[in-house]
Length: 257
Ligand SMILES: *[C@@H]1O[C@H](CO)[C@@H](O)[C@H](O)[C@H]1NC(C)=O
Ligand SMILES: *[C@@H]1O[C@H](CO)[C@@H](O)[C@H](O)[C@H]1NC(C)=O
Ligand SMILES: *[C@@H]1O[C@H](CO)[C@@H](O)[C@H](O)[C@H]1NC(C)=O
Ligand SMILES: *[C@@H]1O[C@H](CO)[C@@H](O)[C@H](O)[C@H]1NC(C)=O
Image 1 (cartoon, protein in one colour):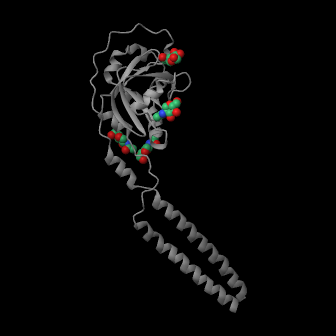
Image 2 (cartoon, protein in one colour; image 1 turned 60 degrees about the vertical axis):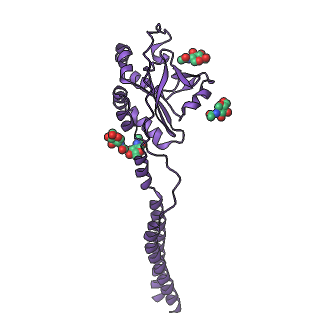
């Protein structure tokens, strides 16, 4: 009888503990949690590209090839970040349209992947990059770009296209988007038979950097994962309490009979 009393007492204590855990967890999630590990701010690439530019042609290719998902995923989920070179709509008009329209869909995808680097580079970082001979792009393998820093102007060579960064659309870690004057045509697709340089391009209009979408970052921070963490740990505690109760209850039954 004393044993069963002991079990009943410990059962009650366990019930109180679980009840406490149940009531404690909602109140703790009400207290403002300190900022969690700073999640990289969400930059909506589609939105950014649809309001700047006009970059509709490039955005259209990004969407039709689904490369937008690759880039957005890199922007969302990596420390490395991303640097994208975006040709204006006029660059596609002046790029021999035929050269793009002749490509297979897999090659078009490679050309679009070729326009981004799997790392965030600020404009000043290109001084460093110009010392490396070939910088890998998202297209991988032989799809590399060469950079030259010409007293602050970033020149880009793809083999077939030589162009420059004409404006910074967005340059906040982890996302850099730079406007370029020409479509970057990879040597890996077009070969090394470089065409004669076309007539010099008109002076590019250097647009000011677009405002970073801070409202969006605030929104994404609000849904921090800290409260779900609290929830899962208290859930474990509760299940443990229920399990212990069951074991102890069966012991109590055994002792009583
Ligand atoms: C990103 O922006 C586009 C265009 O404004 C919108 O259609 C899309 O829903 C946005 N995506 C997210 C995840 O907010
Ligand atoms: C990027 O993050 C946004 C906001 O968290 C999300 O809606 C979107 O689905 C994510 N996209 C990818 C490709 O990870
Ligand atoms: C520049 O390059 C040097 C040597 O390659 C490297 O040690 C340094 O960290 C680089 N700086 C930046 C800002 O990437
Ligand atoms: C990049 O630079 C390297 C070394 O200078 C050179 O061999 C290569 O042909 C260049 N590639 C392009 C695409 O300009």
